[in-house]
Length: 227
Figure 1 (cartoon, rainbow, N blue to C red):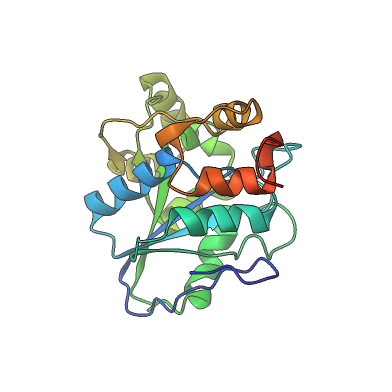
Figure 2: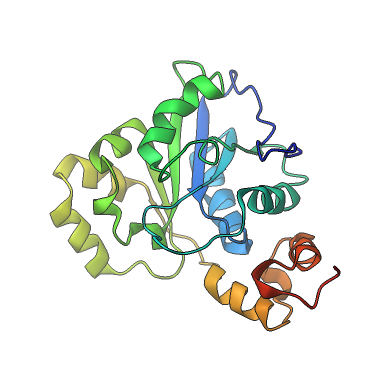
């Protein structure tokens, strides 16, 4: 799946899919932890397809400068090679303003030509639960898309207790039902950016080919790479 010039991903017609995973995030850069979340959720919920949606402006990361949308699309394209049940949508990169997930969930069925009977499953790493109660229209979001939460090693009882108080009982019940227990893959995008900027090789934390692309474009200050 190649991202054409202009930063739009070549999206698939998913009309035959009945169980779709939606995985949004900055993917700055995409790393092994992201792929672990997608694989774990897909296996646990028998998802036929997972679509990755890179955000243009994540509302919960105000002021942070991201790699360009074109670069993050390209990194995802490299990481997802050889994964036929996965694809990328540039829907949020094409939309102006902050990237609200509820807007994406509402727009995606028409965009991907989903069957009205298709069910969207919202893939979340447990790190996404911090501040989830402040997401735009979170109650509607978790009604429109069934949450699937994969532990990334930071799922603490206090966090769930806070969400139980902040969300309606029905919404929290949906969230709790979506919790998956699996050995976590602990990878931090901010740590990766720092290590890359120092010229370090993060090894298996990045999918094959992604580090080479980062260095070729001198992303994250990796000016030791090929010009």
